[in-house]
Length: 346
Image (cartoon, rainbow, N blue to C red):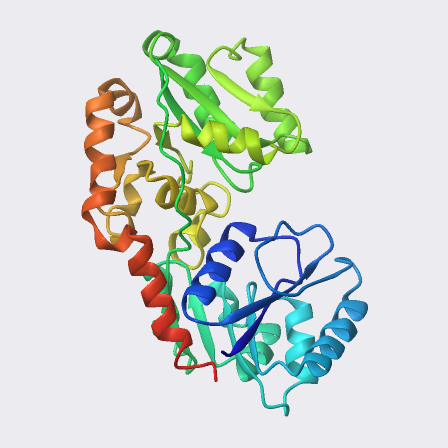
């Protein structure tokens, strides 16, 4: 049985790493791991851990490990960044079969770092169909496929009130938090006995603290639940299991909206697909096929009306579409992944 070394040189994208690991195993490969010291992994063959902050030390360790263990097949969970660039440069003439996940497709245009990587990594996965379309239109000659990084999740437990969760670090460069907090302040009358919002991420940064100060200053804590620090895995899981709608909170003109609209995905999208929870999405996403039939759309002008219309029957109707759409089948995504990597690895 062929071996694959699954590599993550940063502390990011664990939500993709675990599905990739399982998909590779289901494709028939023995999977070993090369990760940073604290990266949350388990269930593999060999697990090689290295310090996460010293790029030179990482590269030396990775090269030594590949040579000593005679790996031919490599998968980079994050196929971008300086460490991956340097690895590709140093191994340009070595016969290695390499595949990887590209998280920010915009880097393909104008990034010298990504051009070096693409000269060695000839096969990329991206995480949504609309990102694959962007890559294909960019003229990249490398082969590209998309998959949804699904992990079967536990069944939801719904509470008495409707719960709308905004996952991710509370940072204004990411999402339109101040608009939402202002809306909640001005519309307590339709929210108080119906809906609770959860900001499911750390607020331990200057922008996050400004959002929390606004919430506290306007006595909105009974409507908005938030966290001061990093949310532990068990707490995160419990919140997701009791969530009715996932709110990516991506609005035109706010944060990195344009990137999320065309060249990368929000982790909120992955969570929606994993837990089979519908999304509350800006209407600008209506033409994105990935989210058809699993999203409730709004714009800032009709947001109050959309919120007023929410009830559990409407949400359950949307949630049922996950079961009726093959794209959200774990088996379908695993098979899709396998067909692509089996053309690459030896």
